[in-house]
Amino acid sequence: MGRKRCVGDCSKMAAGCCGVKKQKLSSSPPSGSGGPGGPHCSGESQCRGAELGLGGSGSGPGGSSRMNGLACGNSLSPGCGTLSPGCGSSLSPGSRKMVVSAEMCCFCFDVLYCHLYGYQPPRTPRFTNDPYPLFVTWKIGRDKRLRGCIGTFSAMNLHSGLREYTLTSALKDSRFPPMTRDELPRLFCSVSLLTNFEDVCDYLDWEVGVHGIRIEFINEKGSKRTATYLPEVAKEQGWDHIQTIDSLLRKGGYKAAISNDFRKTIKLTRYRSEKMTMSYAEYLSHRQHHHFQNGIGHPLPPYNHYS
Image (cartoon, rainbow, N blue to C red):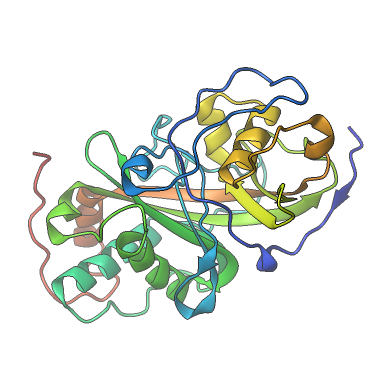
């Protein structure tokens, strides 16, 4: 209680490191311990098992800062994969109406479909074009394996931002080969809009399952590094605050022992997200009921059930 908060500027957030295999963490590691020592992602085979985090600092198309990683862990809560906004949504009771919508997922499917089949891109969508930091996540198959996830902390107008990161996450996530037409019927698309950024002066001043966190720290070589988890990751993994912080430090490439004094040097920004997930089957159904809302004037292939 009474922790000091500093309102931050989300537009200048850099990226963290890429996802790693699920880490087995004990309850809060003792001060001075090495913390979770999950390996840093170094190759595609390792990253295919990714269940955590975001990262890979770098520049996306158009020069915006981008991250690659996972927006929702493989242990999905009820409702994830449906049109319900419950999975990944972390708005407080009585807060404003959600901005994220099923139409945004439809638009991402439209963009990807047009690209893969060589059609003209879909027309400008009808949903809001307000700027938000955002992520587009693709999963595939009955077990909803991660297939690509890249986003940005730089606020982008939604029309151009979703166009850009739909294709970037589907085709340029370095952990996976570019997506193909044959994979379309088995895909799930999630759109996450990041909101309510706050710099906090206490690294424990955030709530598991409510806030995403982005940390900035100086590693043992004196270089500044960053890493982030979306709001749902810590809760899905069953982590407490210390375990989550230590996992992020390892994910960001910190290799030295992690002491409580070092944790206190971390600069932490907390944020919330709005998330919507849609399957390809739901996309086809939604488009049929909304009369080609996004302006695609060509037929879609029939939905094929999982093989």
